[in-house]
Length: 110
Length: 113
Image (cartoon, one colour):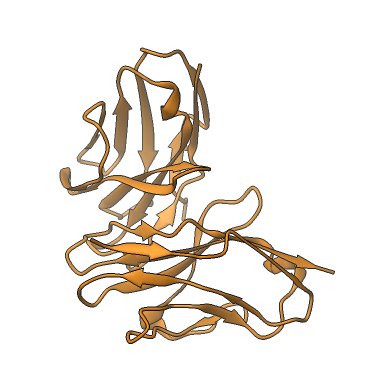
């Protein structure tokens, strides 16, 4: 069975501080991992995916297969980063089905 | 290009009624997935369609059903509504048969009273 766990429901940091949103997954095989973000009153949108190895809005995430983790990091948080963040997984035989974690509400305080 | 469009945006229904929600994917996208979002359960996968065929189904009762038309538009239907069906229903479309990048609609907020 595939499962995504985000241990922190709420995370609060100050502007300029580093931030790390944790994501652990369970999957027998080689999944694709994603981070989705939902800003207030906006639709859910893709932030980044592990296969792209890119940095979006200063965020990066590294897939650690040994620890089955895909933590999202940003060295200097900004107030506009305040949002709900979801980690998601898709398996090779899952089609376009995504399995989501429960989400982490990030608040960046001024 | 236009994003994923879901109609209606808000809906209030009574227990026992049935409801149909609609999703128009991004032009050219042939894959449509549906999710239920609730505060307690988060985002739960309902089903996925590709070229009018249901390819995956989540762990929901048979009261939840869907279909996809030849123009890739999709509908989901919930019969015999229960209070617990109150949720935000999200539709996502993808250009391929993988979740490489799923584009989400703004959702339909269903309230069952």
